[in-house]
Image 1: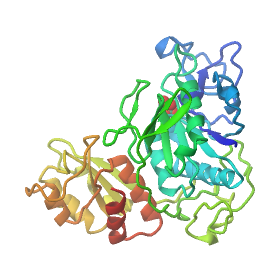
Image 2 (image 1 turned 90 degrees about the vertical axis):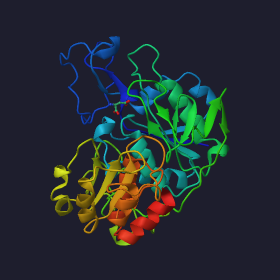
Image 3 (image 1 turned 120 degrees about the horizontal axis):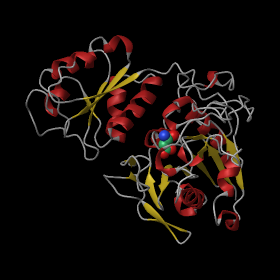
Image 4 (image 1 turned 180 degrees about the horizontal axis):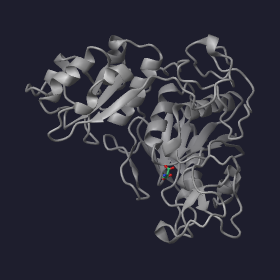
Length: 398
Ligand code: ASP
């Protein structure tokens, strides 16, 4: 059975600029980098210069030894060739919509290649809304194709193996790197350059790719997919050329099973990706001696706030009343800035502790890191969730 492959730019698709014999540009010009042929000097890592996303899905797959021998037909869709820092919720929801259509039409699974910088966030977003049994696998690369030992080809091969594996069905969105399989809900980018950048600090990888086989060792619990609210438009095209290649409507009526919250938003194609009116959710990291001045007026401009607190969910005492006042106006979620571990609920009682902050109305994120907590809160608020619905959802997902 076929695997649907969507390419979204990132290091895996980046090649040198303006070098003879590398005329593989994919057009669209939305990679945010310098144009072909510019004199951009010599870049990091011994390559021929700074790189931008230029490789198409056809280029990427042609560079993977062993992929053709798998015999898996790939339905390739080149989507947004942007660094992952410039991906938006709308871009991702457009891919989810088109991927939903692909599995409804028979694809065994989905692979998305993208930049690694925001992959832990986009993967979690997809995981929250993906309604299918078919695996949705995200991968990328830490070393671009112009460097010695690029990891993109191996990651892409492993991703395709996982996407078509019966063992991976029902696991939601997965992050496949370095022959490890991570559940999107637990995956973190933990290193800025290592090819082993992705890890699941709280759980470990849930599986491995070994000699071309897929071994799944743990199956994370799945939740009902969250609805995609009209405030998070997914009707824009996933293709880079601006055309709505799929042509069909997006909505709860759609045969692809993708759950839009409001069938009245089913026009599809009319809302440009990136034109989101989604609620703004701020992310704020507590730091030593912080008085919270940056939070002044936040409830006037934002619909929600995630606080990355110290350790088990603490902030400096002067910040506690500031957060309490905000929590009276907008949902404020408390996560840990540690990178692993949970916030606590009932251990410390000082001003600014987790118990104090809960009394002041903050909602605890459990094991969710601040980035994922922000993704979840934004989806919930876009769907009109009130404080108690937000608290219930975090109790479920955290
Ligand atoms: N800056 C790149 C990106 O996220 C890094 C990567 O792909 O690893 O698009």
